[in-house]
Image (cartoon, rainbow, N blue to C red; front, side, top):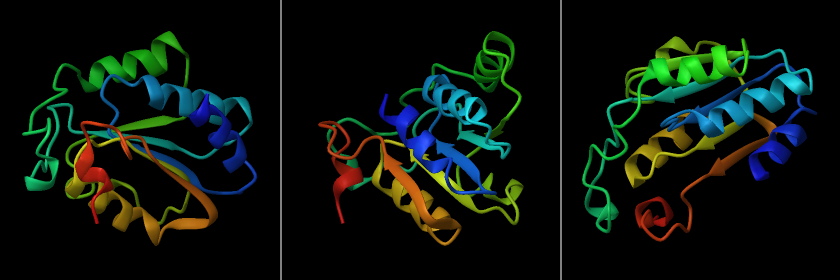
Length: 157
């Protein structure tokens, strides 16, 4: 509900894309893309994931994440959900470590909305630093894991 409502609020900002980093099986990405389409947002919804599990786990992520968790997914599974099951044509799925390997595929783009769902400190930091300068005034960034018991790294300075 929260993502659905926040995407709706971001609809007031014209001419900018939406981004989700940490897609896993595509559920929240599909919600974002579905809501964007339903309110007439024409811009691309970028869905970025390694599809090989959590990366960049470090000492700040000591409770649960060591690297490789959530590897039980695939790019094909997410594309099937968004395109075939839900009939969405506004999403672009990018496979690789973000922003290191996949941000180069997103050029000259501003963002109205970014959902950061990466579980680890370094991935969250790298994503925020990359998107921040590209975020429109009034744009929305949501940290899925902020304050979550097993994602302490995302909350550390």
